[in-house]
Image (cartoon, rainbow, N blue to C red):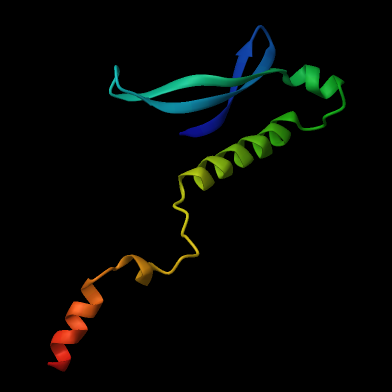
Length: 97
């Protein structure tokens, strides 16, 4: 899952939207869903945002960072030796005998 900023020129205005790219089993490939529809660049400039594309690109970068963080495996604080069970005792016992 990845996000990107889509710019669509329509009738002299540039509209922005944040699009999510996902895997589609029907198409057996990538499909796109609109995650968030934003107004036009001109509207955001009138509202006081100097560079709306850079502003929303930062938002897209944060969404991608969060998506990557969700996919990362969490390592436990518990030692993995606790889950080995009988095996270490059996192998070390054979060395001593």
